[in-house]
Image 1 (cartoon, rainbow, N blue to C red):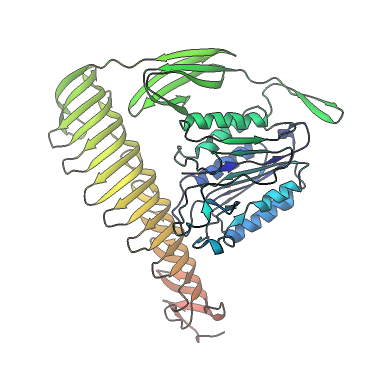
Image 2 (image 1 turned 135 degrees about the vertical axis):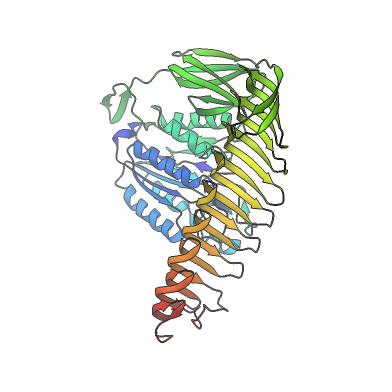
Length: 567
């Protein structure tokens, strides 16, 4: 579950075309946490928002996976700029928490083990809110995509579900939550969170700012099947537009108020009656779900012209071109397909495996729903297209392993789950028969990986948790820790720095509990410096538990080369 997203906007001018003004934005996305599993969409959401704002003319500062100090520095820098901007926007995506009625953003280094210490580890959003209150003559926007399911498992007392409305809402503001106050929002929508995905679509349209929020609300409710219901508190006293209209804009001034006379794009609506259920797409953009035997399903504010309408339910795909007319409602009726079952014997796939088939056919080949029984003991039940497995299906191997998910051209493509008895289970994305994209793999021995995959291997950012309690959060390449990462051992040791081919290699910091010391360095609880092949090699520094510098100099094969200590 994800996101309690809200916006704060302050202004006094009655009508303003924002695209003509000086705009600044700070965008932060955190998804790799030292003491919690990696999030799926946070950095993706930040990237999408930054790209959208840049296209709207904002001067954007984008930061990813930053700690508390970096977050405070970034906020202070942003606050210093807003007095010289006509429009200021703050966006954050990541973990957030509400404690005693106050909303906080969680940096990557927060532990959140006890409520008493929590406020010193997190960022109070009131800091930005107060700065906006002092800048109320300008337009200020605060976007928090931060109310996710709590993954800091030891942090359970004193916090409550979701965020709460920001107090002291000023006149001329609008506050929008991605879901009902105190609730959580969905984190499983495609590559981005459903609210951010729908929001940026609306931000690009030539419409009033209040319409951006209202239309986003309607889209989210529809997409989530009414499970997620954004709330809006509107105290706007004027009109703002983020985007110019396509037509010529005429400006006139009257008594200090700027009026805009505009000619906007043309739109129409689509009404769908369907005997089938599934996901609806317009020009490959996901629009929401419809139920079986449902009527009067509305898709509103579609651009006039020809569009591709698609309904998909697992492997069942219905597709048709539709024509949207200005200010008209186009009616589409979707019927259930007629099924004809036949038997085909002695078929062979491209790998030479023989099978018998029963199900729908077209041109003497499997097409539609059907079942294949292989001579080697394998079995497939699902959808076919032109003689190949295409769409949703279940493939059961003779050895008991099973894949359930989507196929294209006879091999796994899209989302799917494979379970290998007494070995592992993988749930995630596939491409051309291999793990590709985001996925979670759990081994029967208790180990677990959550993160990105490339060509069937752990590659990209992800979190690996060992049965022993050890945990690595960071970047991977070809199943090896590679790049920036944090390794935390169950005994309390911790390494934060660079990795190469599964070894500590490059600049890094190693710390141990105060009652222990680092190898070959008496009384040393912290080493900061160069590493090679999991050993201290190069220039480094050793500190004791109180932070006192004990040694600064060269290391070779884990040992200091000079007199120790030398400070």
